[in-house]
Image 1: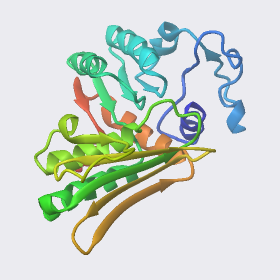
Image 2: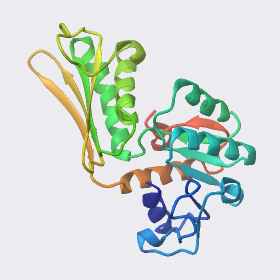
Image 3: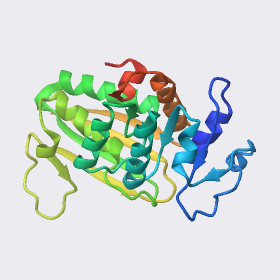
Image 4: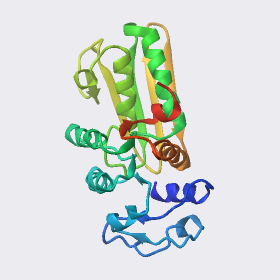
Length: 254
């Protein structure tokens, strides 16, 4: 995702890359940030967050929860906006991010794809319209290197469906099934996960009723769409007052 975001920024006329970060000890530190995209830009990959954000308006973060929280604190101190695409946060870590949004503008989403966020809106409409007579199942597939499951996008899809149906996902989610599980409980929302190869990201929400099934599916075969969405979010929070925003705010889907 870092390479995808850098490539996207270098193709823009209304934004400028001023820094690129990697974790300490990474072999790419010191190399030109645009090299992997075939667009050398003179910006060297570094590991010093303080220097990186000194001349920045917005930091785009696709890392791990621990890295994001460290970047969050640095951005909060300097008043730099933050776009967060990292997933796998604990409830306590999410609360820390929300609290920081009282001081800086933060755009956070489990998936910055415009298509995925339109799909989320469709899920909301479908769940509200179809109502309690339809069972909800969420299926997702990602590459073999993804470390969290279900994906943040799958969880968000489940949350949207649960909210539309007046449920609490924490109470009704079922993560995988094995053995003699008994009949499906009406209020549950099921999740199934696949990990393999180089799958960028596939998500399907099934709303299954008596005699029919509605499926809402999004498939990604490139990370470029995530990068473009993240940059739309960066433009949105640039100069905006402190607050906690998501892609529905960015796209006007509220």
